[in-house]
Image 1 (tube, rainbow, N blue to C red):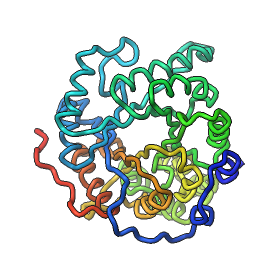
Image 2 (cartoon, helix red, strand yellow):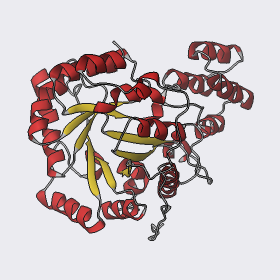
Image 3 (tube, rainbow, N blue to C red):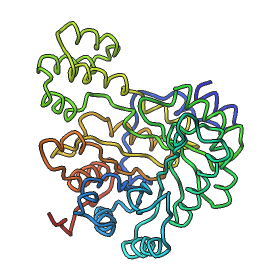
Image 4 (cartoon, one colour):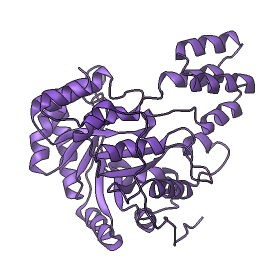
Length: 369
């Protein structure tokens, strides 16, 4: 059952515009109701190295006008989930939110359902674990908690009543190589509709709309030994939408080994899925991961079509946050120090432009080296 069928069965009426999904969307000139935010995951290098405190992260987001704050619990709060988080740390979180005028958006949680050797975590234990993260999200004032796509829909449905009590929505992340037409995502959508709970929804990660092979990926693979002619071939094959298995075979026949095969195999886990597929699910999309691998000096993400993505979200009436999620750091840290703050700033400028904002984001407080 595709998204349109699910929407129809659930009584969610798609508009003629979203049903037809035209190839070109009108440019929206007025300021959009979509809001800008940042996942603090973007600053993982700086926080790990002690260059940025939690307050540095929140202040940076606020100065950029990206007032929605998303976190990964384990990164932001020491001890979560194994030993819990002290009330003083939660109080400090709320002080920062108030001091900088920022809004808690999402606590991204994990479910370690394979923590026991040789067997999966029992169902009731999985549900209890999710409820624990719901409670933590509520302590932080979050509207949403992000569920990894590996979690079975039955677990989330069982936890939904507790989420409703806490006024929180559980959002399954739709992340490459999965997409909105993948059977596993359709199974979640069907379970959500059957449950009748509006505490269940989706968080699409924009990395599933990878329309070009990211330059930082290509450059990294070349640094570790992929010959330029093979790297050029893989990049062009991705552009031409050649089946990944054919590309891998051709690379082998070109004499590629090791890193060259790995560069081709990346195509198995990424694809240029269509942003318009979000339209049929918009009634359950409440937060968006603004994944990006590189923002150029002229404020362009070379591999992800954000102009088309923002237009689709506007067409679907989306009013939530797009939270910057920088993941280019891991592709460059072998030869240069990532500047995650500058990368996030550039994406926030791009988003502000696409959303029709008059004032462009800028930083007032430099981060100490």
